[in-house]
Amino acid sequence: MQSAGFLLLCVPLISLLCESSKTPTGEFPESVTARSCRELLKKYGHKKDGLYYLRSKDNEVYQTYCDMSTNGGGWTLVASVHENNIHGSCTVGDRWTSQQGSSSYHPAGDGSWSNKVLFGTAEAATNDDYKNPGYYDIKAKDIAVWHVHNDNELEFWKVASVLRYHTNSNFLTPFGGNLYHFFKKYHLQYGIGTCNDRGISVPIVYDIGSDMRVNELYGESVRADFDTGYVTFRVFNNYQEAYAMCSGVRPKGCYAQYYCIGGGGYFPNTFCSDFAYLNANNGATNGYGASKEIINAAVFIFYR
Image (cartoon, rainbow, N blue to C red):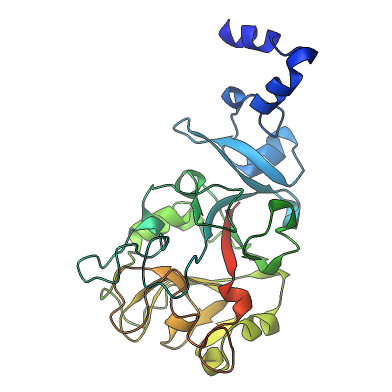
């Protein structure tokens, strides 16, 4: 009866108030039932890119971005890795590595890749780190990754992307359907692996970009250390330092710190930050460091 009474208040005189209470799908939050953007697309026919509300299996309603047009649509934004201070060494804001400094007392860092701690908002995903319940709640088969220039408004995300790609091999299925379960099984921690532990590398399909473009984004001195055309999860460098994700590449050497991001919390021999040692050459690519385009872009992770 309460919900019916609330709906009766939605008369023209206060329609603006009622509209502000609705989700982008035109529903009231309490009526949201979809658990993913794919469900919104397939079951309810929503085809427009933008912000939508979803509901987790534990009935937590949250707002995120849905890409309803790339490769058939139905992609749910679940996380954004944003470097707020490229010169800070695992300081405040390095949630995907450690906010406690590079410390042997915290070799796993903040553990954001394998815990249920949430932070940020979808709309501010190019300004700060972001992680929503979909990261651990959605059972997906594939991922999409966007590198989007920092400080861009939502409506410009696609055109402001340095690189965009997706997988189409159902690689998440044997790992519980998401990265949360993957990293629960394959821990990110200093000293528990070697650079021969290559992680899991998955072929990618470019939506914006190419193998040549990926090479251009990373330093000339490390291009022989990887193959392009992949996304890789959970690798170690020659110092046994752990990294979460290598975007666009598959390591074949031991210099992951120059082209991978995120990871454990102890980096005694390189640099501790969400973007690792990508800034080794201050944004120039004539050495080991990555380009300014990569350094100044947030990394979006989508599920489908």
